[in-house]
Image (cartoon, rainbow, N blue to C red):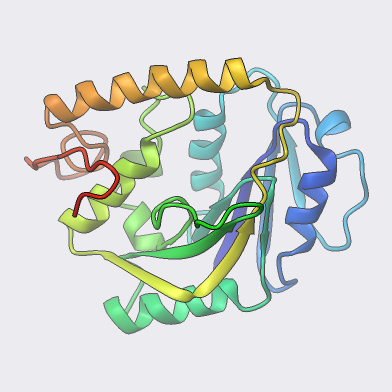
Length: 230
């Protein structure tokens, strides 16, 4: 089983160095930057593939990475994340145990640094290669979102298809306190816009990889789950 790590960096060289260096040497690491001189101006302690796409959106960079990493299971992390030596191995083992192959998604437990709670169970996952192949041209991102809520649709997709599992022992750190060059106002603006898009898509019963953007579209029902709801 081959697995790889993908990171879309956003002008945070210290954080990117931390994220890349945390990945065990046996896994391929691909980073798509806006500007290599700004995003990756610090040395890494391991081999990493760096590519620069200054005019490409984050989602488009992710879709391109899915094509480049064809044949691999892929874990997508942010440049403010740190995984542990056994994170990917444990997720791989859980996936094989549950699905006997790579037609599945395994959620990873991410601890938010500075907070008592952890990230949503679908925020960081190991995506099986066969599961990624269900998307047309391996495009996991729909392009309708700026940054948020597409992971919720991936989660719904995996659940509807019976391909979802979660591994408590596969863990990582998410230091979201790193702000980079963005501002809180910009963050809120993007979050609100994407949330409204998500609500509209739910009302229309759309889900990327199930009703559209996949090789065999089908109907499904999407329901917004609020905090405290089961």
